Image (cartoon, rainbow, N blue to C red; front, side, top):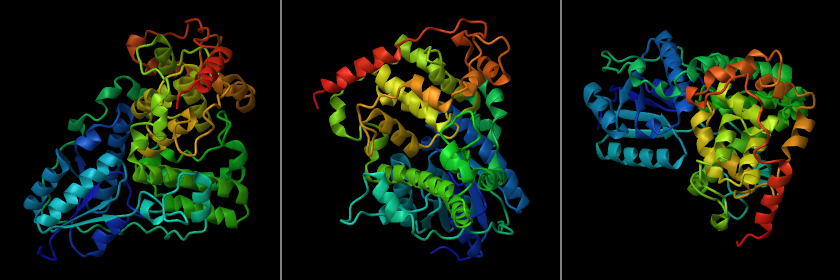
Length: 475
């Protein structure tokens, strides 16, 4: 057995905050020295360019916050089990605490590591924090998992969620710190190339910024959230998906803020916001119970559907570059290049265009978003793509084809969003639209003076081809 005064290694992953952090709270409450560690292992190495770059920014910010608490963030690169064993040998640590993750790769790694540490006589303990409800704690009346969102929402909407924990006043430090890598040496932004300096202007880092976003949303926007959130040119969303992705704010803090707003009179908007938090839970619930959600058709009979998987097609390149000739689609894809984010309504429109009008497999879009989004989330991204494509659980009817023209008329009636991101054809395009040409790879060879393209596939032609494929499907 380890000495009760031996350090606790706090293995940080997607929990880059100090408050409402059960693993950190337990480590500090133990009375033992705490050694915060971030490990760049093979699971983390595998994430895409933009999320890896954004993760690096978040790690650097958290390191500074830990210093304010009399602590440090130790950085190590390698297989997590080997790194943890080395740190245990270096420090005499007797325990490793971490916050649970639920994607298949992380779960397999964590299970293996917990067993290996236990075999070594080391306490290995995981904690809640990334979700409101553990996936195994939410069940249908017959004991299974939920495959439809609305019944799950009805199940959990009145459930108790623990109040957020306070940040520790001080984090107990060891008498001697182990060696650490330098964050710059990891080059987490290497794949971003010149796009990083453009996107950096749109990033708000860390826990303080996330809490400010939440406060502003609750004070100024939640009352109108239900009505305004679908209009991409309006400041109607919470913008919290990014800090939730990296754990710079906890879902519990968001939940309780919404409950206070609900009880304070902003019921409709606050309830809608809580539903969005539960939609995120639903995605994790499904990923936990059916891991194939992230890698293949959730409805396995869709494996026979005649989607193309050829990413070399000119139409796919046009979609990725924001050059389809459909302005609402192109505006969304350009917003993605400049900011690393995309309005949720527009995400549905661009996803429908790829999977329905261009008849491309949703995995092409999922993989592109996984490389480009700073708020990339493995569960939400997979569920979103399969929901639009029709192959997922609780999906929109498979035959539904979003009309990008009427969607634009309804949700961007004055073309403010489209004009904000598409420079071609404007005499004096805004900086947001021009920034696209600074952010994209040079090999794309695009300029604001280019002519705006004709549609690669019109709505009429795309809809007809999609409906024909659905009507003749052999599954």
